[in-house]
Length: 77
Image (cartoon, rainbow, N blue to C red):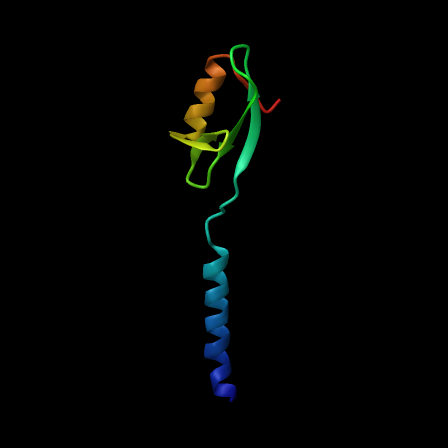
């Protein structure tokens, strides 16, 4: 029985390490507003895209946020 302990332990460690390296699927959101638009929710989706009020824009979040801020939109504070 003891001879099987090391391989089993190794398999458990490898499985745990593999599963713990899974990409974070967290969705991060903030509220944005401007003088010309009503308040809206901007989120960074798990694929890195920006979504507005739940609709994926197909655009990278950082690029989308930079463009919003360049036009005078205030997000997150």
